[in-house]
Amino acid sequence: MTALVEAKSVSRHYRMPRNHLLRAPEMLTAVDSASFTLNRGETLGVVGESGSGKSTLARMVMAFEAPDSGEIRFDGTDIHALGASDLRRMRQRFQMIFQDPFGSLDPRRKIGWSIAEPLRVTQSEAPSHKTAEALEQVGLRAADADKYPHEFSGGQRQRIAIARAIVTRPDLIVADEAVSALDVSVQAQILNLLMDLQDELGLAMLFISHDLAVVASICDQLLVMQHGKTLEYGAATQILNAPAHPYTKSLLTAAGA
Amino acid sequence: MKRLPVNLLIGAALVLLVIGAAALSLIWTPHDYTEMNIRGKFGPPSELHWLGTDQLGRDVVSQLMAAARNSMAVALAAVLIGGSIGTALGLLASAIGGWVEDLVMRIADIGFAFPALLFAIMLAAVFGPSLTNAILAISFINIPVFARVARASANQIWTREYVTAAQAAGLTRAAISRDHILPNIAAPIIVQATIEFAVAILAEAALSYLGLGAQPPAPSWGRMLSEAQTLMYLAPQLAIYPGLCIVTAVLGFGLLGDGLRDVTDPRLVRER
Image (cartoon, rainbow over all chains, first blue to last red; front, side, top):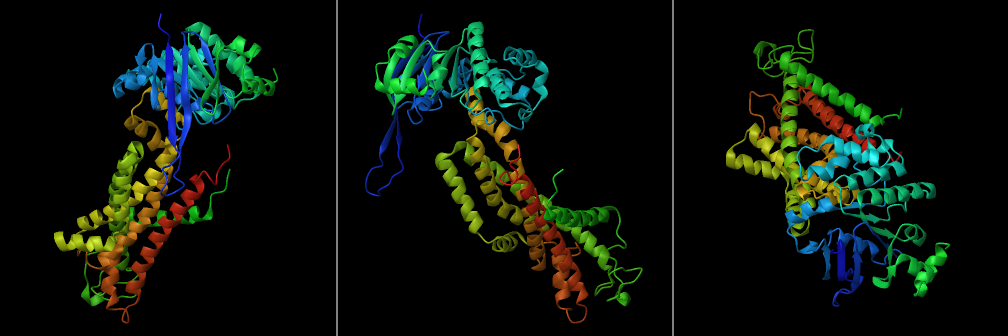
């Protein structure tokens, strides 16, 4: 069986703003030859402080930007080699959850409309029972579809964002700091929900976080990043029990483990 | 209940007054505004002629009302045409980005720098003076204004996570512009349209004053003003009335636009 997501020495550089007229602008290496393999139904946690390149890695897995070198294969297909319309169709199979539950839903659209948005890409008339089903799967009521985002709390909005992510029955969900903006008690609820959905739907997850404590509870594998470089990559239990790199140890201490 | 800003209320009242007069003139004016009565020229205000009569004995109130209708029609057409094209260009520039965005915005800068009246005079010289050419000229000067506002607002919306979510869902940039960007930039566009309405009224009056807008016998505040100019010492009220109308309309739409901006500006109302 092929891995669901396979990243092979993926690198991404950004050009810094030019600060001297005659000198070439400096390059910032956001991600430096990162590699990982994610199997179906498993969770890979990517941990690092802000600026470590973990979000850039997520954006490349989501095909929002292309790596400068290396490749990312989704179910055997190099997603960055796909044409625009093939990629759009492929997007049904990998969805994303964002950090800010207040920013990830269009304030002018009813949430039922927002949840059905990925469905409308491939079918002109999105069946309303799928929206209702997705809402119930995340612990909300089908009748909530007719409400606007401002009528919900942060945790509820994150559930709505999850409903939108699972409505196309994807194989992969990329969660970029998906619980960082939530209260600790709500964090636990959302993490539990994600784990339940993972069991129910066989989802693979790429879980991006700066908080090792959050990641530790749900991940099978861990990838620790700093300044774009991969410090450690392996089974979560092994890294958590015997961190090889001092940076990982400091993260563990910070997480209170 | 939050209190509405004073400028919004005053502006709305003035705008209602002007629009009311214009709308009423469609079905009723005290007299036919073209009806002349040389013997009754320069008549003082009376029960029959509320603001008196002009140099040809025409009823001033009726002319002002019909001119209001004309002015509103020109401004509406110009803002709608210029606003639609400008907004579409701004959305396009923002959605595509890169050199396309630069190109559209630089062209808008050039259009912005081009004096509107000069352009109208050029149009009139080439195609002859007419109301249609006045509308086209005013529409044209509105395009870069709306392109700028739409592009700046759209660029902000493009950075929102719900737009990224729509991209993750597989929507094209055109579909995102239609489904998310346009509805979320509607407020600043409407505010700008209201302000540009005032500018358009002033531009129409200026063009008609120069004889490049409404042609006789179509009534226009600008033309009434220019006709009254030679009679300033004989009958100053004939210049004052259309002048007051222009001021009322321009001030009304200007205040309404400012007031709407105060109400909708997220920097002023961050109360969630």
